[in-house]
Image (cartoon, rainbow, N blue to C red):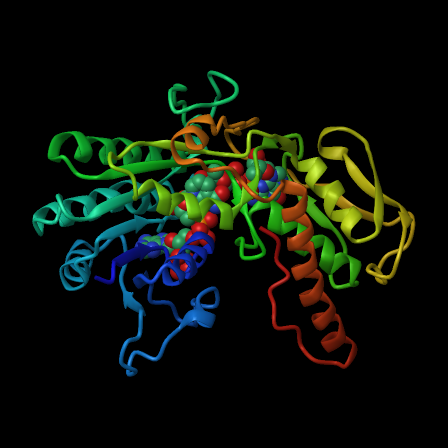
Length: 374
Ligand code: NDP
Ligand code: GDR
């Protein structure tokens, strides 16, 4: 029997990798996409299948986590064996600006899905994965963080995700549902949204190297994160739903770096050596050497990074470091890509795009991209 999966957030970074992964495993994959005024399926266009063809195994449904009747209808039509709830307003800084919407989608959206599964009588047959997050640890109470570390959320996003975490646990305990939380630490890729810090850096510096942007404006570059590769992490999401008993797992690399280090790696991939000088909001990064031909838009002495307090958060999560020992022991999972390898992959992809855009610009064409930083 072909297994059926339903993915919320299929158009996002993780959703697109997970859809590919499940299709490779022979699943029929259904995804929920939001209605938008322009195309928003770029990350899954390469796996799109014409629905008019027989045997199409990848199907998209319009929907929204704020819409109960829509979720109930999709679930009743698809009757999935596995639901992966990846849909979310996932940007921590944005959640301070849109706290109510973030709670509606990230917290109540999770409840809507679980309750629809129960209402349809599928609670004993449909397995449920909840995209939980290291942001739950917020103001960390213990280092490294494990499945037993106390939560102390520091943003409307994290508070909403904490509700989602506990409501998944509650449906497991109250109704015997197979529901699991993957407590995932930051994971990135060339498909990462442009306003998350790693992608902002790789895309921004690649553009600067090609003369498309003058400077990168950053927030707190002392912040420490445990960065893994999204491809490694979606494999783990699937593994969590294949166990005999549902359990929650920390997924992390167990290694931590600063945002400043990530900037340095990116620069190195572009053949640039940087010097950081000044303190606090006056800190800058200046080019001190250039090797190779990847940065024709720059010369020694150029300032490529400044601090803009606009990107500071009202409450910051200064440090996160996960301990993935349980995932290794129980599931045999270990990450395959280091943060530096992932950075190199992201720079390569963003440099390719930046070079194309530089060529268009040289020949007088308008650039098909927003250069706004997030
Ligand atoms: P993205 O921001 O790339 O993707 C989020 C997805 O959710 C997109 O498909 C988006 O649609 C969709 N979405 C947003 N709002 C709604 C809504 N109201 N109804 C339905 N769908 C909606 O996130 P990631 O892929 O990086 O992360 C996947 C999940 O994992 C998220 O829940 C995130 O919070 C969580 N997480 C992520 C981590 C990371 O480091 N990446 C770490 C820990 C947890 P659209 O494309 O239209 O915007
Ligand atoms: P995070 O990721 O908040 O950890 O949430 P993000 O990449 O946005 O920030 C990481 C750290 O970098 C600092 N930072 C900046 N961040 C952004 N976006 N832009 C900047 O200019 C900037 N300068 C410094 C931040 O302050 C922060 O400390 C991500 C999301 O994917 C969540 O959905 C997920 O739950 C967590 O990871 C785990």
